[in-house]
Structure formats: C-alpha cells, structure tokens
Image 1 (cartoon, rainbow, N blue to C red):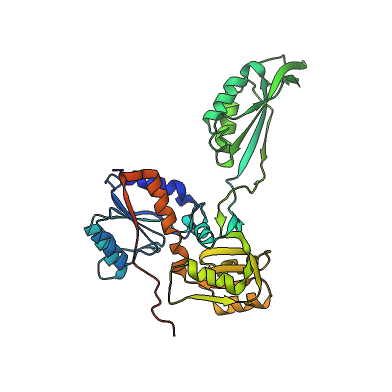
Image 2: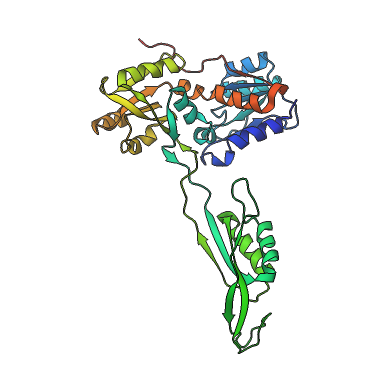
Length: 373
C-alpha cells in the first residue's frame, strides 16, 4: 500500500497547490503523511454525512473539492458541522485533502471534466493560465571556456524546457574585440591595446525566478573580468492547456435540445437546469465554467460562443448579460457541475496506483436544495 505522502504527491502533481487562488485553502488538511492508504473516497463537499460515509467504508483518505476550513479557526470542536466532520475523520483515522481552485483550472480538472461530460470537443481555456515567465540569457565567451560556463548556469537552473534539461545553443566562433583601460585586470590582452579573441555565443532559456542565480553563476564561471551578456524577457506563447473554464464544440443543436442534453448528462438535482435564451437558437460552440461562474460573464459576452454553462448565476448579472444579446445562459446546480470531476480524478488515481488502492466516489448528494415547486 502507498504512503499518504505518495498519494498526496500524485494529486499535487496533477493539481499543483501553487496554482490555487491566493484566498484559497488547499492541500492536505489532516493526516499523517507516513500512514498507509488502502481506500480513497472522493466527494465535492466535506460535509458531516460524507465524513460518516468515509468512516463507515473505512477510508484512509477523503479527497474533496471544497475546503473544510476556508478561513482561519482557533479550534474544531465537534459542536459545529465542520468540527463534526473533522472529528469523525480523526476518529476513523481518515486523512483529508482539498483540491479546489487548483483543480478548477487544471488539465483533467473540474471545468474540463464538465465540458467533456457535456460532449464538448476541441477544448481550450476561456482564460488561459499564463506560463511561468521565462527569460533568455545570451553570453559571449572564449570557446575553450564555454563548457564550464554552460555547466555553471545549468547547475543554477537554466536550460530546463519541459521534460528536458541542460538545453542550450552555442553558435560558431566569432571575433570579440576590446581594449582594456587603466585599472582593468584582463585575463587576455594588455591595458591600452586592442585585443581580438575567438569567442562563441551561448544562449539558454530559464525561468525568471532563477534569473539572478543564473546570472551570478555565469559571472562567477566566466573567465573575463567584465563579460558581455544580455537577458531578454520571452513572450508567453499561450500554449498551456490550463486556465479558467473551457470552450468547446459539439454538433449543432437547438438551445432546447442542448439544455435537455445538459440535464441528462448531470446528476439529477432539485435545482434542475435553468435557461435564458431562445429555445430555437442554434448551439454549436459552448463555454463552461465549473462552480460559480458569473465572474466571467463580461468576458464571455465578448466570445464567439452560442451558450455559457455555469452555476449560481444571480439575477442582475444574468439579466444584464441577456440584454447584451450575447450567448444563451444555462445555469446548473453547483454540486452537479463539479461532481463530474470526481470519476475523472478517481480513475486517474486508480490508473496510477492500480490494485494498491480501492477508490470510490461518494454516494452522498450534498446539493443543499431539497424541493423545487
């Protein structure tokens, strides 16, 4: 059986906590990283009923989407619902992990799972997540000193591109010219005399976060007293598949047919599916956002899409959106939309660990609405 730390590392690799919003609270909430994990339960909400289900099934880890403690607390006595949840899990020796906004944006995350559940294809983010800012360092160095300079900057973190490291480019030799002035202590040449040296051009890309370390390593390894170099900031190519929401396509249907397909694809709730728009409107290109997506309304209004599927739309933002005569709105239950992610992450963990763990999606419906008259 894997240790909890191994399972956490897998989940954090797919849904890095560093990509969560600053206000969010994600990651391992409770549990001993060294404990063994045999059973993992997945749920949208860490409710007392879900905790009871985890305890009854003897789960070793409960993975949820919504945080148990989004704000700081000074205690978690079992006199409150949140306290009862953690108290139940603690008594059952069941760890708790949250993947919230870090799972919303990720490949294989909540919005992508919702889009795929609705049959959308050719998915791209509504708002692509920017790549980590990158730079390119160019330095001119004598040919016989190029290897140690490349090694030094690689050790400092330069030259890493995706799954590759030690990536660099060295051009054919050229001539470097300089004249040392009074006070200089040149490795080559004489003060006051123009010197010509055979040099090569070394280029390497690097994350901006290691820029200072890489430049310092280059200066320390370079044989010249005053090396010639430059650092250029690289443009974001916009190729990352992560980001907020998703846009996809499907064979053209009417809005009424699309809404019916949405209702059939999602778990049944008392909320149902609310629609704003002409039922006969053609729908082919669709934007979706798992969870509460009204913060994207202004952006979606400018997109070339026929419908926007999300949750928790409020009266005034929805009304103003409709007045702009943009995409149709399809409002679904928050829990139902996000529950589409659970079988995806469950399958991902099962594929990664095989028979070493048992996995299950919670049978508890945590949608809060019980009647719709």
